Length: 394
Image (cartoon, rainbow, N blue to C red; front, side, top):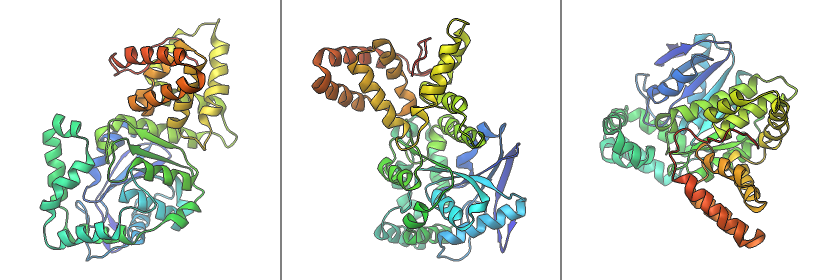
């Protein structure tokens, strides 16, 4: 697709009134979004494209700025006839999405920012990367970069895929890699990002070392947006955990599509599915009768659509608080259900231990001891389907 003076490689799919544009990371191409885009395509129009200097797009001489990338995106959207879009960007793609929202706020419906920050890395880091690219030495640094892209479990389970991503990075145009490193080196968007008012959500792989969860939490705080951890993923959750990323994206789109006056029922159902998982909520809904129908509607609207759907605290933090309260009261049935739900919220066994230890001090050893027993039993069960209890309480 011709975008101003550059040709940008892009792929379109899906259908719907709303458009989601996916922005790739440094050293990758549009294919890192294939699984996520394919999952959401029945609901929205999708646009994937290779950043300048990446994949099959033109690679003009380095250096680049983040604003260069933003202007590329504006020209691409013009060429595609897209007035407004939700931008989903990972790593440098997230930086570009933030800058685009600052430069063209009227063209952004929302931001899904993943494994990124308002400022990423140090000048020394990017100088070393630029030197490697200019020396034609991306092959030397690629294995170390790949080890930060993916978890060891992914590398072991999918060696052919890992090799393909290694080839992708090493074959990136040197001027494209160096130019985008310069953009990362010079970009400090903290002030302008803090001024954004666009709806946003921030996601991060729980094992990301390149842009760690704390950096993403800082970004979420700047945006006054929720933060969500993606379990079982490192720097590219869209590759390692595409279904989880797609669920977060669809939940965000559902909130955007809600009426201006908050629809607590819709927000509550989205939160309920986000925490407890689709399989559990579908089972609970199927089991609802006239006896408990009003109760199910009540907790969906006033619990899941109330505190669980507020901003300020992210879902992970709210789940830690819920686990502590259920342990202290004690509410063993609900505690068991919420321990199972940790697979959806990214609460780790180490964090569970600390919650129970804290409760032991302030609420008593017996309730903490019972919580440990419940958690040990639940965590030993298969985790693929999330919570199994039929009754659904917040």
